[in-house]
Length: 383
Ligand SMILES: [Fe+2]
Image (cartoon, rainbow, N blue to C red; front, side, top):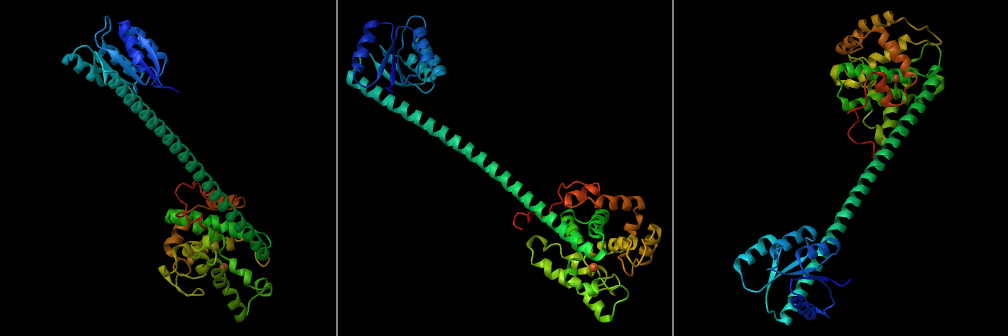
């Protein structure tokens, strides 16, 4: 589209001369005989260059140019004047952002050069503005894509995380059913263990690994033959050694799985005893990882309270008495003491909730907590 030049002067002869001088320059020429007429044109039309006489009746040249800025801020403004009047020049430059002065009578060649230069500058400005807009739009698009991608990654990570949890839970239920006929022991001890860990004050970022470790504590029994694992009556020395190996097998199975490598403490050390007489490492006191010391208490409690083909479920008070009795020998006394402060109703309620819990966030909810900041430091995406 041809650039538009607006010529403003109250003398028709001047307007005609200017138009004649600029005709054939590839521009569209618009004429205005007064300030209001010029502003009317500017309000409706985009203009590249404005040439305005400085002495006009009514609105003066500097006034018209100052008003034109509001309508067409990018237009190039040229002042046309009879005399080199310093005051008018100052006002035109300050208020009208005039970039060039033309003295009457003008030289046509010079006029054309000045106008051509003005159009070039105007078009350059427009191009810069257009590029700015394109860049800004592209930046917005990029930010939008980046946010979308981030959301997708989070969704996929969460889906993967849930799939892992559900798969583990199903595996553990199957293992539980093999040994205990009725599943549920692992889910219960995982929820009990989480509750006790919260009471003990285990670091929040360790809770999910603790939950997984508790759920998988006996995963190593997968490597113990049925003839030994399900044997009724007492075990021989050799059979006991085979059974004890489940902590080693469990550790070996889990350490090869990326997202479980931080959940090994319970599967590996849950049969250690505080006095160092457990198996298989015979660690004592705080040499046993805290998670395993917490777990040992709830594992025994649940075993005591559960019905087995060879024994009845023990009443709560009796189970509590055994835990209290073994504080300092089997159990960490501080953890046993925390455990014993928790009411029977709480353990019963946790046992009921555990039957429906197959994920960490649900286990937390069963303990009256929310996930909040308990997630382990972003391992799940890579796992
Ligand atoms: Fe075990």
